[in-house]
Length: 168
Image (cartoon, rainbow, N blue to C red; front, side, top):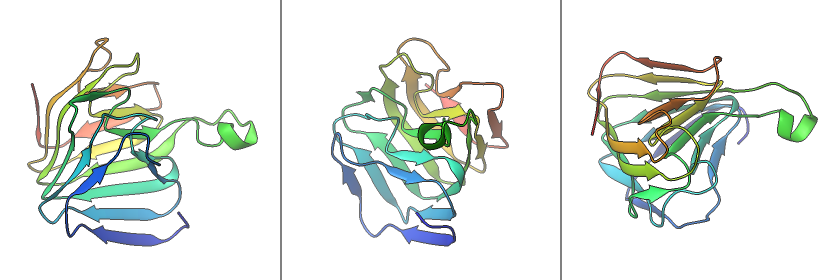
């Protein structure tokens, strides 16, 4: 996506088929307003989560919004923040970037990460995640016990929970 600020307001549930192209936010500020709808991964999550925030991008999730996995499991977490953003294309060793803000009434629910990768709901590799209000992460785990609901992959990662609930 090009740099700038964008707001996406959901008008219906979004069903994401397995192996579909992920939504990757590299530059710009994106807000997804759930408007009471869901983003549902139909056959599990592959390719580091369909919602990926990297580089200089920021993603804000505004509720009410539910992000879940119909199959209940997949090879990666629901959302991936950071990663080797520039190394893939330039050979740089820069890790991370990207930020995710989870606001009130956002729910990340019912997903098990089955790969040897941390985090059932969110994996953070050099990025930042901020959780606010009455947001909820529930029944999201990592099969290999790496990170539980939220996995921090390197010491450049940040997960700051000001409010909300993680359970199950």
